[in-house]
Image (cartoon, rainbow, N blue to C red; front, side, top):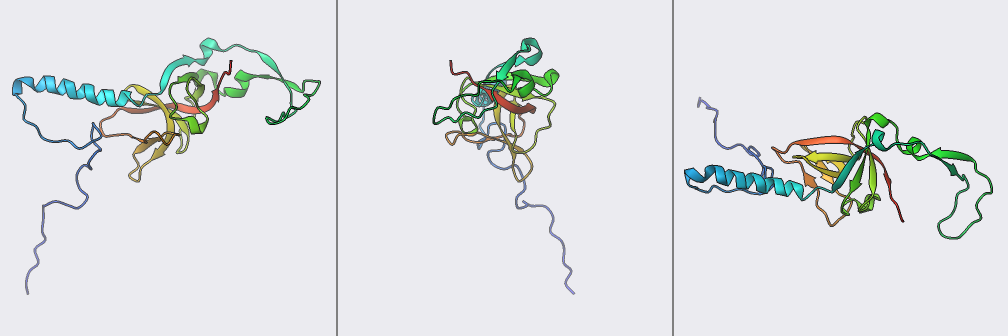
Length: 200
């Protein structure tokens, strides 16, 4: 009887790092450089990788809620006013509303973030809007989150790939999803629970 010897070693299908999943998000190649210039080239590549991360940031500023929070009870008319045709408002106030109470659940873990750009337009979050972020809420797939990638902040919808790695989805077809690449420092700072916009 012929003895069957198992074959060991060799390349396995699907093994190894997939193209485009490294630090730079694209295919890399081997280049010979002078040994004395290794550190210089390394610094240039680090700066290039950081610049690619900075391009995704759409956050202008972050303000703590407790530093700006004041109580203000504003009259709330329960009568629903249609946006299309004018309607006479009720002549009495049903109750009063404090926007802090309405928008903020946990003041100690909530902060405001001003948005830059239009990558979240289709989610109703526009350039110069202020979003409310709550750090006490656990982020779930489908939530809009404030995320940090190598120290740069961005507001996107949280998703994940088939392999379980996180993915950040914009709400504008003009922008591409952000893959959280190997080696990138990724952190979710909180869940976006609301947005505020001034017209004047």
